[in-house]
Structure formats: structure tokens, C-alpha cells
Length: 381
Image (cartoon, rainbow, N blue to C red; front, top):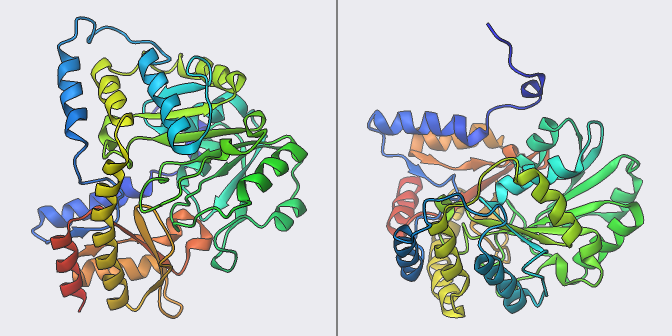
């Protein structure tokens, strides 16, 4: 037997990859499982976006290799989007790089900046991929704890007490997943100052800005942020295009150039039709967001009712595609969701997959129709 690379010893199969096999087995066995675990939008993209990809299929150059940097008009659309919604000025030529989903950007950035033995600041709780990619490239995760008492924001006094001598990269994610916490007025300014004091590159992973959030923010809106910050963004949640795999990384031209060195050796460009569809999505008016969020508001109200029925508590000021809820008493998160799966045929995500600070919490997805959520409430009640 040929042995796998040692790097695979540092990571496990992604939780949802494993758990969904169990859920799908129950479904094929005839169990009427309601899946409230995954944040995969079930709504449709704008119709004009779908039409654009159809037209793109017929373009003479649709089936050729595409530019590693994406179509110039896609980069223009991304730059305009940032100007319009975040008041951030970007050069479409050198400060915007389209990605096949922002998740690949986590790997590209890590490969571009991390050497074996470097350290990376990772939020706990936080997106599990930050940790797994850090380990895959041979770097060391250093967790900084977030908690409800501080509104799930970094504690800078605690950060300053850490050994930062080998820290090269810091992952932040606001609006925060899984908790839905918003950045306060000063958070991004404090992060930029922290990065400059310690020579750390900060990456804000920002795919949830437009979901149930009236005030989208970018870390790049802070003066001097481009020197020490990058931002990832995505069309997956904002425009219901998760399967299309379209994202972006934006920031200083030197940082973008370094990431492109990695990316250009990893793929051969995004499919032409998808790029044309993405351009149309980025042109959508504010009415798109109003309509989208009217649906999610109804769903969130129902998920709150479901959380109430389970005797959980939650923050009504949180935003994003999920509801982060605290379990009653001292319940173990994984045992709790297994019990609900067995007894009520509802799959909910345990907070522990996001880190030790997720113990005692569960996460509900809003990616289910009103009818499905109403059925879930009936089952619990």
C-alpha cells in the first residue's frame, strides 16, 4: 500500500462531508429528514444572471481557456461593486482577483504567504477551513477566543499577551460565521493598527455582508488597510450562486500579484459563461437585496420559533444566513443534535465543529422554505 502524504495526518475529512453521508443514508432509508445544517442557498439567482450564462454558452470563445485573472469586465464589475456598496476604491487591473469561490482563496493566500513553522491567528469559534488549510501548508494554528460576553469580537488585550513572534497571518470573519456577530464601529480600525504593530497580514472573509444586514462594511474602508489587509468575498450567498463557484480577493496590488502566482499554477481560468453571469449579478440594484432579505426575515422568524421550542436562546441582532443558538443547561452540542436527528428527524449543526468555544451552541441554517421550517416546528412541539 502506498502511504498518503504526512500532511493528511494533520487534518480530518470535513465534518459535513462525513455527517451528510449519515443524513443521506437516513433519507434513502425512508426517514423524512429536514436538513437545517448546511448554508447552501435554496433560492434562485436573478433571472438575468441565468440568461447571461445561457448566452455565454453560445459565445465563440466560450469553450477556450480563460484568463487566470478573469475577464476584464468581471474585474471591472467587482471593483464597481466595492465602490458602490463599501465606498472602497480598487484598481480593476491590479487590486481585484476573481476566484472559483472564496474558499479556494483561503488556500491560495495561505500558500502565497505561509512557510512551514509560521503561525496563524484563527478565531474560535470560526470557519473550520482556516485551521485545516493552515495545517495542510505546515503552519501552526494559534487560536484566539471569541465569546458572547464580548459580542464575539476579538479581545485585543488577550491578543497582545500571545506570543506573536511567528504569526504571519490572521483570519477574521465579519459578519461572523457561525455567530452572526457584526463588527462594531472601531473593530476594523483596531485590527489594522494591530496588524501594523506586529507585521501581520489580516484577511477578512466577508461573504455574509448582505444577508439580513443593513450596513455592509469592508475592512478595506479603513485608511491604510490595503498595506496589511486582504478581503475575500463571494457571490454564493449574496446572489444564490453557491454552485457557480465565484468569489474574489481584493487588496493591494503586490498581495494580489503574490496570490496570482499560486492561482495561475492551480487552474486554467473560470468558465466564460459563469463569468458573464457573475457580471450581471454584480450589477443588481438594491431591490435585489431587499427582496432577498424579505424572504430570509420570514425564515429567521420561524427559526427563532424553532429555537424557542427547543428551549434555546439567541441574539436577535445577529445577521447572516444562520441562527446561532445557546443550548439549555449544560447540554453537549453533538449529543444534542444527534438526539434531535434521531427523535425529530431534523439535522442541525453542532457548534463544536467551529471550535471549543462552540460547545453548548447549535447553528440553524435559513436555507429551507417556510413550509419546511413550519414542519420542523411541529415536529419539536
